[in-house]
Length: 392
Image (cartoon, rainbow, N blue to C red; front, side, top):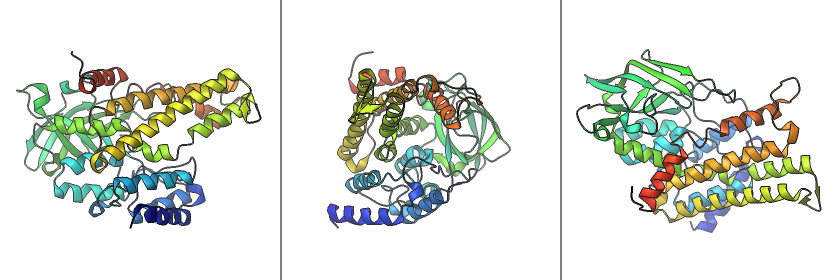
């Protein structure tokens, strides 16, 4: 089948199988067994995409994916965007852990974990940062010792996104204290629902507690769930961060993004327009500037995907995506709130609607975007050293 035939077939399938309630903004599954999907159209869309293998379109079919080539994958994104179809599944498993396991996992590990991610049966969280090891992640102290068929883990992690709803964690632990810090780290997998794991949500100013403290008191990870070589997990962990920072999965959400129309709708409502042009010239420039930045980012992401061999995630250049995308995210919520004037920063539940309060929460939460996943200052150091080749 050539690419145009694939496009026609994909367009027909999407029109037939994507329910109206799965188009435009709305609920998206992350696969967690602890979160019930409330919207029936979202459930139906997920079921159909799982059957098609398109929750992870470019994964091999033997692991639950669609087996699409890079070119076919881009066509799918374009056709989803044309009807504003939401991703059926978006999770740490699909965007970070799964691609890493495809590179570094054993065949047994792939067969055991990847199909469950593709079927939206499990959500993962990331055990990296610690109270004393954030930007200097290699100084982590959570440790693991082999005891028979399991590694026994003790220590703690912090800022663990989604840990309260996660089924499994991929974690960096110290397994050798007598070597340079990067050489004594291992990458392991452990179930969250066990007596040795305690999760405590961290209250945020946004009112949303997505971050957590996670404590390990003789928690167990199976010996078979060591990914890569013992004491060589730093390599695996860094590769996962490149997948995280690349924004590759955002090609799906980006292709169906409603942020442009969201900004325009707000501007039209609160500022007014004549002949399709916003009345306020300053706001008009700000909206256009944001739209150009977002379009440039998505086009660059798409170009990188198309140029990468087999759609592989690039290396240190992913730090560029992280810096640009998080700053655009902050620009978006800053602009969205300012355009609303006095209705843009409401906190009184009696005076403001649920929708208005949610916008304010999103604005506050966006302030953390340039900090989590490695601060933008750290990303600029990586860009300087690894991309531009500048001296230390």
